[in-house]
Length: 287
Image 1 (cartoon, rainbow, N blue to C red):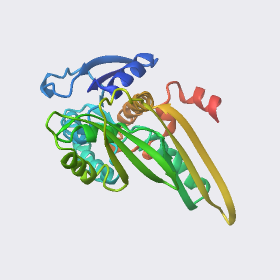
Image 2 (tube, helix red, strand yellow; image 1 turned 45 degrees about the vertical axis):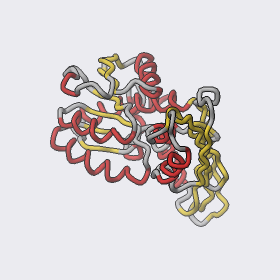
Image 3 (cartoon, rainbow, N blue to C red; image 1 turned 60 degrees about the horizontal axis):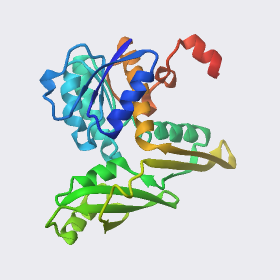
Image 4 (cartoon, helix red, strand yellow; image 1 turned 180 degrees about the horizontal axis):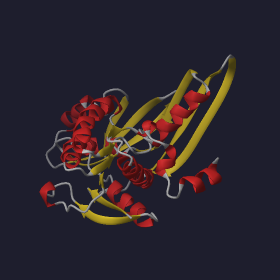
């Protein structure tokens, strides 16, 4: 049994807990709040699921990897993934551990689908359209802005990979809306998209964790044009993120057993490593 622990017990942490308990080859080795002292973490852990806010991932994953504990996270700032991979890879290589980064559904499982579609049609364009739905990373970023009591960031697809962010906020008493709005618009999570900030009396009255994606690739296979592929899903956002992380915990242990140490993104994984069961049974069932 793979001993899996969870660091952070918010929406994703709770979903990951349920996925660990449902896995036939895993047992829950502990739940830690991200403000707990890392030195208190028990040593009987194979993989730690780092379910903290994205901007805290590197700090915790670095300490854990240095102790030889494999980690899985759902870091979701696309433009910073390579630098995170580079930093964690050096720590993992030196301490014989594995860190699978950005292991949610996007980045993560959607990244694998984009890679497969590119293999099927090497030349062309892929459009990733999110939502409409609640973005957990953007919501957490909005909540962290001074003056914000509570927040909800909704992603609205406009087509061809372009999105609108609708950010609903409850203000702290005495907070200035214009100051808070300017801070949200300047945050890297929101600065690259059309963003609207709206003050409301109750965020909870609007809250919904539903989300989804529409992936479309139009491309060329060999010399044949007009190859079109489409992938759609409608999901509970934290439930899918937690499940993907748990599947990646399995892959991390298999990599460690083979001596394949380092930090990896999901497109670098063997898909069969994500699944419980023997290689023979999986090939017979899936190929």
